[in-house]
Image (tube, rainbow, N blue to C red; front, top):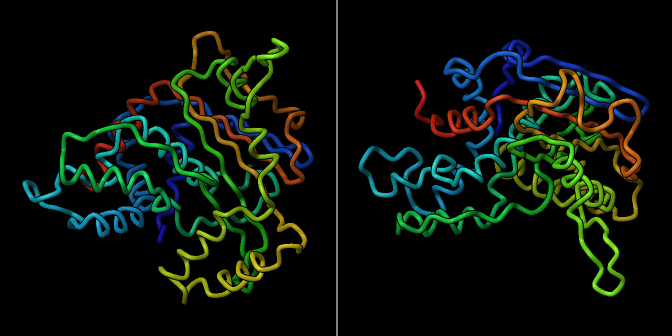
Length: 317
C-alpha cells in the first residue's frame, strides 16, 4: 500500500505556486524556485519508494529474485524500478508526481476534495514484467519499454462510511522542453495529412482520449482488485462501493475529476508565471462532463532530478 504523506513543506519551498479556479475548471502552475540538490532528492525519495513498493514486491516475486538482493546476488542488476531505461523513469516520474501534487495541493484543486491515493497501479504494466523477466536472465537485453495502458493514476474521495463518492483520474506527461508547440502536440495530437484530400488534421491527443474515456475507467476495477488483495480490512467499504459502481453499467456517472499533469523543463523565452495551457477559462477542446484540473510543473533541471531520484531508490541514506 501507498502510505507516505507528501512532503508538502518541501514542495512549497521548491516550487512557486500559482493556483486558479473558474467554475468547473482548476489550473495550477508550479515553477521551480530553488535548485535541485541532494537534500531535495532525499526529501522526495520516501514518497517515490512508497508509490513503487507494491509493484516492486510484485515484479520481484514474479521474476524470482529477492526484494532487496545483496550486492553480487543473482538478479542484482534487475531491481525495479531502478533498472528501467531512462525514458521509462521520466514517464514514471510524471505519474508519481500526479499523485504527490494531488495530495499536497488538494486545497488548490478544483472542488477542494479530500483525495487519497491508497495504492499506485504500476504493477499493471505487462511490458515491464516481460522486460524484467528477460533482463534478470540476460543483462545485455536492455531495450525501451512500451507504455502502460489505461489511467496513469487514480485517487479516491471517501465519505464518512469509507465508500467511494468521487474519483480523480490522472493523465501525466513528461517532455524535456515545454514549448507551446510541444504542448499543442500533446493536447491535440500530431499533424496528419489525408491521402485523398491533402488536408492536414490533428491525430489523437490528450483531449481526444479524455473526452472519450468511459465514465467508470478500467483502472478503477484494477484499483479495487489491489485493495481486495492488499488491505481488504482497511478498505472494505470502498471495495464494496466500487463493486456496485462497476456492476451497474447503466447507473449514473460517478462524480469525477479529470487531472492533466504536464511536467518538463522551462525554455528561455517563457516569461515567469505564464502558463502554456490557458488558465482563465476551460479549454474549448475539453468536452467531457467532469471537472477538470490542469497542472503545469515547470522545472529547470528535470532530468537531473529524475535521474537522482531513480538512482537512489532503496539505496539512499
